[in-house]
Structures are given as C-alpha cells and as structure tokens.
Amino acid sequence: MPPSQPRVLYVTDLAYDAKGRRYCDEDIFLTSRLRANFDIALCHPLEASALMDAFDLVVVRNSGPVLHYQEAYDAFRAEAVRRGTLVYNELTGKADMAGKQYLLDLSAAGRPVIPTIDRPQDLGRLPEAAEYVVKPKAGADSIGLEFVPGERLRDLPYDGVLVQPRIPFAYEVSFYFIDHTFQYALYAPHTDRRWVLERYRPTAADLEFAQLFVDWNDIGHGIQRVDACRAPDGQLLLVELEDLNPYLSLDLLDDATRDAFVTGLKDSLLGLLKARTP
Image (tube, rainbow, N blue to C red; front, side, top):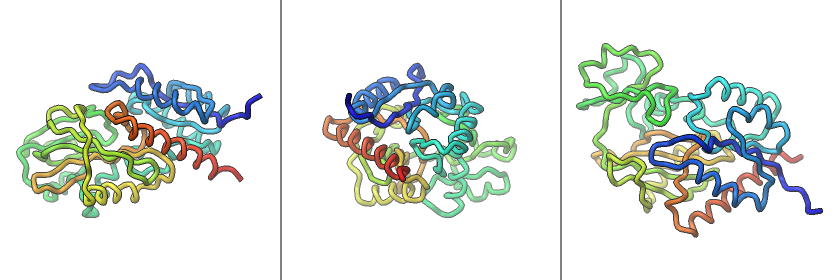
C-alpha cells in the first residue's frame, strides 16, 4: 500500500462566471498537477466548513468574490481559527482578505498607492481629476464601482465606500508572488481591456515596488497578486493587493514559467504543513 499523502481540501467554485476569465480551467489544471504530492478533494466554498476537519490543509483558490456568500465565509474563517485548521492562504493577511481599509491606511502613510479617502473632510487629500472612482469597501470584481464628477463628491453618502481619483494611467500590471518570492508579471497594454494580458518584464524598480507590499502583508505562506497602474508621471501606484483568492492567468504563461509556479506552490504548501508539524 503506498504511503499516505497530505490531505488537501481545495475550495473552488467551478461554475463561477468571471468576465474574460475561466476560473475552472485554472483550478482543474492546478489540482491535476498537485495530485502527485497531495490527496486532493474539491469542494464549493459553501461546503468548506462542514468538510475541513477531514483534511490536513484547506486551500482557498478561485472561489469567487466572498461578498456573494459573506456570512458563510465569515463562519468558515471563524471556525478555522477556532479549530486551528491550516488554511492557504494563511488567514493573517491585511489586504483584500480583510477588506479595503488597507488602501486608506497605506495612502495616509504616504505609500505609493492611488490616493484614497472615505470621509468628506479628507477631500483635500485627493488630487484634482476629471472624474473620481467610488467603490464599496467590501467590493470585488468592480462590483458596485461608479465614476462621478468632482462636483458630486461632497454630496456622496460616505457610508462604506472609498473615493479615489480616476487616473489616466498608461496600463495596469500585476505581479504574482508565492510566499514572498516573485514568480512572474502580466500587464494589460490596452486600458479598455483589463483581462487581455501579456507577459511583462519588470525592472528592478518595479520589483522593489511590488515587494514592498508583499513584505508589508502578514502572510508567510500564500499566493499574492500586486495590482498596480502606471501613472502619467511614470510612477507605479498600487490598485489593490489581492491576498485571498487571486486569479493567476496561468494559461498565458510559457510551460517553463507555469511549471516553476506549480513547483513553488507545492513547496509552499508542504512548507506550511511542515511548519505545523511538531
């Protein structure tokens, strides 16, 4: 009888319909490759709490925006913490995993983030812009996002929303990390097509920018995606730090980069399990 492998509960919503992306293909690929080192079962996010006790590790991947099942997700987190369940990504993240407050905190601290406020008395901290972006603090996938002219800003109901200037950026770029190690970068050269991505060759300054946020976040084991935009002055500004279930666009990578990512993910999962082993 072959030796047992670590048991992994892989949380994904294979039926989630994402604009311009096929989440299910990514998770089918990853689980097919990870089965060489783990005994894997897939489940819907609504089933994770009931099933997780039978597994050594719960991996939360392409489970869709949690705001669609917020109560169930909050219950899962609470139960995982109470039971001491190993969850990947680790539940210690300070970025999107915990809401959008980090954008306010980092902006107030002078970090390279799109200027962000949530109170009318702070409007003076925003630069002049033709339009402003208003989005829910608990938003995801641009749900609830709207553009408003400057003259409407003082009349907004500042209740659970963030306000940012609409920056005429050159492009958006994403940096992908496993633990604190950079893996690859992709960018959207066409500003009107966010998910039409191409490989991006980051400069040393680009990587220093992305590493700043990954090192700031409190995750030792996990996948993080640093989303940024190239401002008119050439500076990169953080759009968001996705540390819960970032889509990885693995289908756009060459075989060598994709294989290296899978190896890094396997090593990260094994490292988390080893760290828990007495």
